[in-house]
Length: 638
Image (cartoon, rainbow, N blue to C red):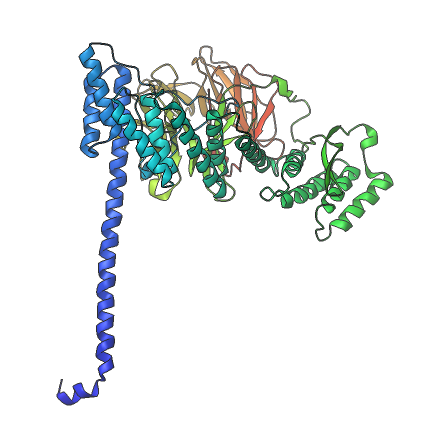
């Protein structure tokens, strides 16, 4: 470039070029820093998961009485995370036991126990593995370690790290249940309340309810927290019943409105529910009663067209359109709204949507239904479109969420580990979740892997998948561990491991692809033998004693029904008889009942009936929607 050409370039252009160059360099440096940081975060997450795995192994080895293996597991923890307080305390405890010559202490990791309402309570700490939650182990370590844990918990609490504070406090309480008991319980109570408030504000209502109830376990007489818990539980019942039972929805909203009119969106939901209930009554039961609902709604808010709707139904009522005079109306005394105030008047009892069940089928009265145990099921969250695992007490009380973005739950018999089909794209496949400590493990990496089932010992799982290129369904077994190797057991679907023996029941065919139905095989895939010869027989599940297999089939009587087979005699008994869908059967832990899903009254609900046969009854509505119902599953646990 000549000097004349350089002179024709303005000086400000050099400044612009320099600035752009510096900006590009800065962006490049920032990208490198962010990339390094993201990589380090992934390394930290993996390390924490490995720490959690090793600590869980240490607990298992302690339970088995294997001192050396437990010590080795603790040492692996310290190699990954030097100074880990749980590993340090565990090693000290093991060394004390070894030096004293006494037998090994029994680990106190126990299954999650039901609370008073029967719901599965996620034992604290409830955190994700990525947050750094560490499983705890009982220890009789020195007081200095306990004081350090308490100081760490207080520091986390003061910094607003409620989950970490809970972790530390639970670890301390398991190490020594009597250490500074009043201070530990008070701090733990406040942490639970803060977590509940935080989840409540974020609309994570099931989690908030679980934290409120944990706080109340520490201070049952706290009326303020009890009121918050009751309001939230009632509101969750509203969400569950909305669209499935309008009479119950209205009654619950009236209760909330009487208690606190400004609670959440109750003031908006109540008139809307009254209108929806009125529409249902006008179509199916009684225009006079429908007009009453529209009138009550108008006393709260005036929606477009509602006055006309009220007047039209009232005219039909006056003209004799109601059916109350024919004795088809049941009333009960309850709380309703009159002129914007709360008073006691006569209100409607629950009026169910007309069922499509044949008149010949009898519905069990509520007193004849099971009340013990909890049913785990997966259903779509209508807001997110993802499945979530819910826990429904058999007594019909409020359901709670156990895991989001999860389907097909299988809880280990000790209640300590849940296997499920993970719906997150970066965790596709089968995952394991420990409710007691929040540990999340990835077992498989194929989105097609589904319907897992635990072995009787709780150390292996079996599942079905069409992961291969030919898209044919096969059954696989693997050790229940992070990224474990799988063994192909052969063609088949819907496996269920025998609760007492090394045997698997599944849907399959013979070697030539014929003779399809339900089959059994050993855990190695050998000794295949047919149970039934109807190809559509599916979703087999063992009774607790292994004497029966309950399954569903849509070929035997033209639509999905539930059946029971006596393994000894081969006799098959039809349990349900409805033109609707009855499917996904599970057997109660005492072997006396069968639960299943059905849309026989127009909406998906959980039903139950005696395993020997008899009338079926509704246990609870499904929280959400089943969507592709064959992609969901149930499990009945204690």
